[in-house]
Image 1 (spheres, rainbow, N blue to C red):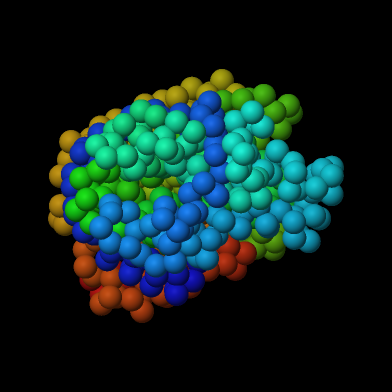
Image 2 (cartoon, rainbow, N blue to C red; image 1 turned 120 degrees about the horizontal axis):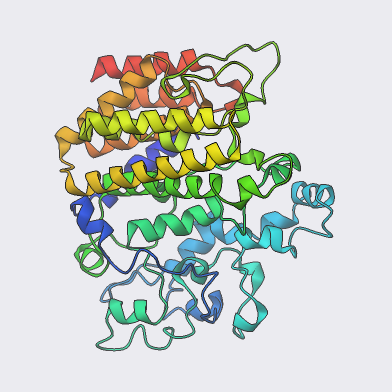
Length: 443
């Protein structure tokens, strides 16, 4: 992640912050949070070509007089990396990975297509559908077979489209579940240690940052807010973190961990606790790893640790419970599968408790500033020694500075912060702590 990317994030953020709303409103917003993912529903996917007409979403320029820009297809084709996801499966690196995995090729293997394309069954593919379109419109917006012809009709409401199969992407939890289904994985499609061993890069995700970096193909205006709920990047950040934590815990307590033979799914563990030179003695206890001894293969707990500053601001007692259960989860690795499953279940209950507390809390500038201060304090004292936790903390500090209108005044320090996490193989915790301390002194 480069400093230039973060500047793009800041620009996008200024576009996002058109209307601010309460977290509870956003979670309760457009559509049910338990919506079926587009790949899993029984809706027919008609194909990107059905959206690409110049009078629909394929205009070369933005148009006025409608509630959409009408150039969404062009934006996706030219600027959105999702459009090239299938093409990546045909490059030399993907061919090498396919050979190592025993696949004939990557661009026809379900193992790869499930996240690099809109890989629905043949019987759910319309006449215009092409797998080579990559992660196209319906991979995110849902199969359009039941709403394509009607969604622009006079009198048609957004709620009507949702009932007909449009995915409720305006709802933060639903959007996070959709994105994380590939950027973290599900039980059915997951970047396992085997896949990573063949050459697949490590996965990283944070909903607010990744959404800001994606070229927007919608207008953040009053009409958008009325139809899909107000845009609030703090709520997107916290909602994404909570959903990621919950989904990670479902994996730790599920078949990926417990039905994988002698070794559990190693991709759920901290990559960098093993993947560093033997001469690089970097092990030290953090607040979340109290009770662990050197040499223990640690779970990747970054999706839980990043919640601690939020809990601390909302309720010190809740923060203590959350910290205690993160520690218990980490220690359970040494105590067997039953202890691990029990610890994951108990931590999931505390994450749910935090979600409820956040929905009831105010999210004004004072709350956001205290969360930022807590993250900076933890970073400064070396609590984000693990690369993934530091990466999440850097994105969090960036986002919170933006929502507090303090980003531009601290852009050089933000650049230094991101430079310290630019390369996971070159990551040095002390350098990250120093960059965080410099930011803290400037605020």
